[in-house]
Length: 362
Image (tube, rainbow, N blue to C red; front, side, top):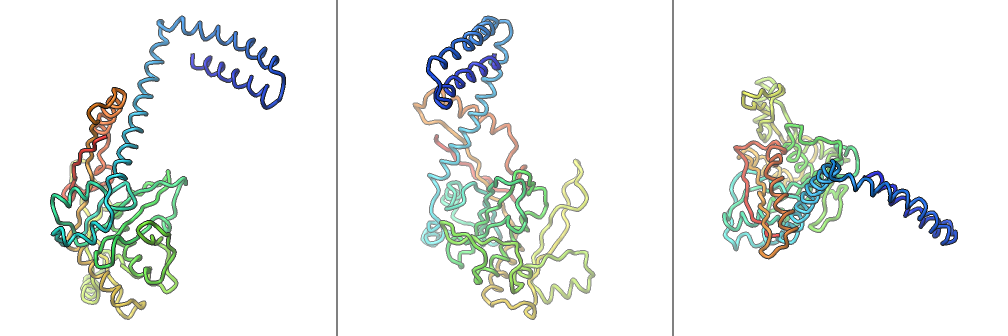
């Protein structure tokens, strides 16, 4: 039935090509349509006549898959539109935080969001009910590109939210449709390292992109003066004891625990190896005192711990919505509950995970 329907549509379009593009007479176009169209209509009627003998199964299966795809697209689109319409400006978080009685706690907070400007609605909901957030905030967004792979030196876009004293950054992670960026166990450490490069390159007006909140700097490329290469130096704990103690005395360090080199077993908990970020000695490439101080604050915040804040949305249709809208939202909620959770897809440790629930009225 689908093939015959496609042939009938092709014949109808071909008759238009004859009359409009080839500029033949309408009589010739009508004769072509009547001759071939009559044959294909007879085949289509024969298929419809046998609909109750088994063809209905394929039609119902097509309707089912079409409903699932429409529901997922509709729900995802409405969630994104809700986030855009209900986001708050960055000034609300940076300029009015003191008036709202918001306190800063030690540590780094990663806020994963789909929007690339402003403060997401779930985080403003969180701050309104619990007026506190971390000493350093990093808004992380993932954006796919129409490329198979994005080079590592062009993957991270880093910018500031508010003035320097706020210690709030935005990181846009660009990836291609063949990239598997979350397979690396040190993804968050890559972001911290990129922010360190951004802090050291910010004064030099390195390659940047103008955005709504300001300039977004592309990090990953070594600077002309070498500052980017030595902003934060990763050091493994496999070094000797003497060199380790000497480094800890001369430099400022940060410890974290990425996944072990050996693959984790299904029964044993994930074990992480210790790696450190150190700042270069003052004798190595020139670094301004303000830049070194901000990097030190980043190091201290990482030593205090890391938290991951995600939004947990619950879609609800408005009262009085039509049946089709309520059906699509109901199907979307069912699919969303049975799909892979974002913390699992993002490889986030449960001990450091904070999920903020919020009802989206669609």
